[in-house]
Image 1: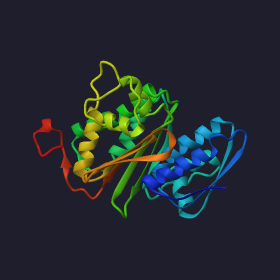
Image 2: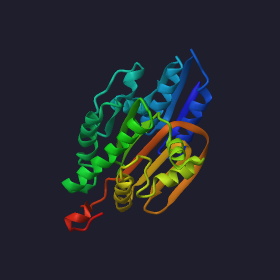
Image 3: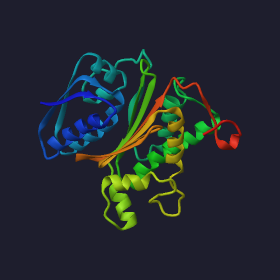
Image 4: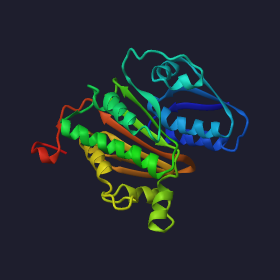
Length: 282
């Protein structure tokens, strides 16, 4: 039995998911039992789904054993519906539903982000112009994953934690990873951490003839002022950015794709505008 226990939005939480994949990635035609216990941050359904789909690609059968509060919240966000559980209505309105988007569903993704994330009353107050730019930045991540990493799907999920005044939104893909794309573009072999360092620099992009980095830079600025954080996991690289510091770490094994997690503080009373709107802005 594989166990996921106390999976949170941190290095250890991602490490557990990577260990799950590493322990089973060579399995074929098997039943893989997974016990999810004690706590599971619901937005982490996004990277978990990447791993489970990779295992299913090897013609394995996945069975999930979930109980208590963890079961309830993963039923409310729709994730467990793919694994034989009945859906449960989200009467608490704390979930951003789990969705699996095909590469051609960019419009559906934009509607999802607008309705399920940006229009939430829990989100920091943003001007309509800034909100549109943030939508563009998140949609750019979808485009990067679906067009430039050769992923089949983009996996999205989020969760509001009212007791902690936090809201997480997570995107994952099963594509080639940042290291592969940046190393090919620069024609040099980089580690995953080195590739992430390059990718987060404003203006750097592997897309020819397209200005890069603006979307990521905008999100970093918003998160810095909001005092939330951004995480990127790709291959064996881990990156976390907050208003206090940047953290780079390396896992022992590799995640089969890329994850971007955005965490916002919902107790932020500031209002945010673009510089061009001539108000106190980001």
